[in-house]
Length: 265
Image 1 (cartoon, rainbow, N blue to C red):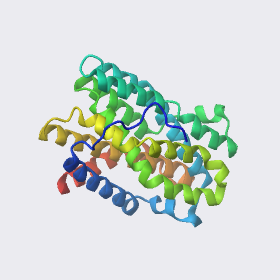
Image 2: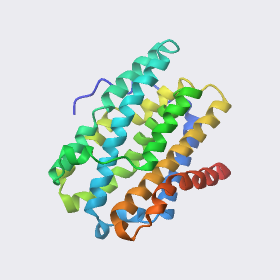
Image 3: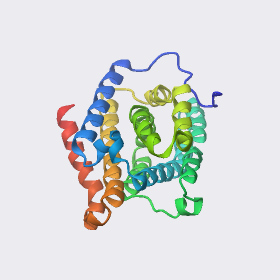
Image 4: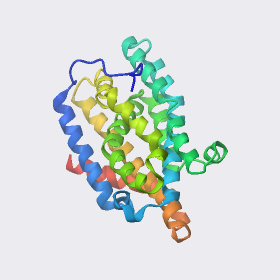
């Protein structure tokens, strides 16, 4: 696959000791996800595949990419007069990522969904909260939370998506997951995990900045978990789900996960 315009140009990983701490925290997040959330273990079980969950998960991925497409230019603009190189790097990255939603759209088309059906679906409450968090923190402290979200998603996708896609392909066929596979391949070829990390480390100066990074990362993970809870409840559980709990799931999970993680890291 040809290299995009946004790839890792840093010769070394920045702040490697801090990265070790963050990697350990992310591994804990992954373990907690599978152990503590109903239905999560089913993502690795071929006998528990649910087509509605598959579709809704991909739709929400597209929604999140589209919403982030509006935020990333604000991040680049913030750094335009503060760190022009970072502004350029993030601008290229945001532009590259911003249309990856169409890769997932191609997969959804192959299982019978039209663009009209896809774009008629509203985001989960967790996704609304996540994007609200981006705008709030951008207005009150800068774009760090939004940037950390980029790193989190690149990292978590690389850890979880290959296994999930292996399961999905047994049911929908490899031809119908080409978009998701292409997305992963591009991220890997361009070393997006370390690239985004290195960009963020340009603005992490001291221990206080590191603690703020961990706080943002923890909240972002909490909202990812909450999104899964909502999507699982609305598809797999369906009529058995308690509708009143769907909008409660996101803030509740955010608080609980944040408290647990801050207490152990």
